[in-house]
Image (cartoon, rainbow, N blue to C red; front, side, top):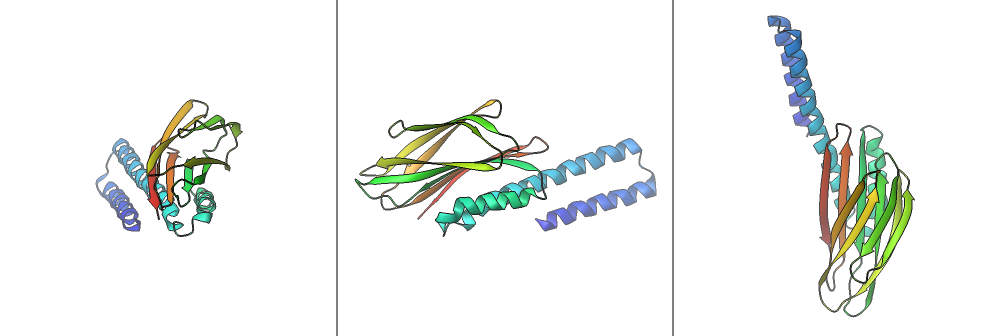
Length: 203
């Protein structure tokens, strides 16, 4: 990634030299500079987004700390780069047949504003939670329970307002004799670009 940024800086530097040598018009210079800045910002956004997603994978071997590690990493990066994140993390422990399995759902709001009327509904038994508000840079944690005799796929439906209505439907694969971690990320950058990711890793 550093190589890409160095290349872009070299292009900008060469363009400035050519401008000084051949007297390119101010309008053309401004337009080209704006285009180069847009390219640079897009590359930076992509780099930050992939780093945020990979931060979850780094903690895969120690799942009891994965949510806290992710939140700490996001806060650290936001000290030097402007973006917002809404993360939904589902941590399902090892599933045993015909036994109750209780799993944790974490919603981490770092969008730079509060979100309101947050509702979660679990398809297995219709159980649900409701929160009037989730402050910026905070998270909420809830538990759901299921009991299965064979592999199954559930859904978790989440609605929130920021202030517009947002809905997310997340697939939750539950596999006998396996644990699973599912994440759903929404990253909003200052130029209005929005990146989303859904993924899972099991054991």
